[in-house]
Length: 197
Image (cartoon, rainbow, N blue to C red):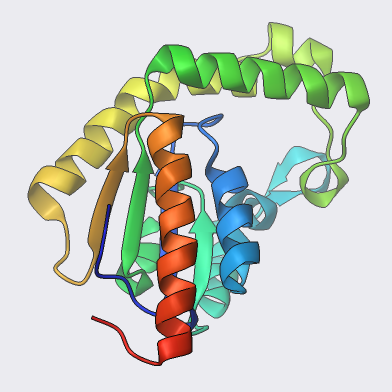
């Protein structure tokens, strides 16, 4: 566990990991529990009809959201906005789960979304033909990006971590759940006491 945490009103938490690892679920839980804004990078990146927002426009939107004193942001976008996120975050969480765990989660999540026709970012929906027959499928993306994400974040953790960041790696959903409970209890308590370590 991380014992030295800022008060809730100063928490700036970045959550990364392969698609399907549970980044958004964790971010929503922390946002609700700590009372801080949730910034979902996917929601800023995707326009209607699965069109991609231009890079500079995306960077401006992210920069505006991250100007707040506290937030939790989820998403990778390593080559587009991660430099902005890292420069402002004080807690960096990597959900480094085994590929088998990620694939079970992303397949089930996608199945539910397709069957319920759930609206996602900008009103987009995942479609069965895209999931099964397209290399743009989120399932295919999760499979192919898992190893690359592991290399990128391992290098960041081992060699390039900025001093202002508290770096946290979770290898199982259980560890993530326990850490989230610890953060909400510790940060809220610290905020009430008006001090941090």
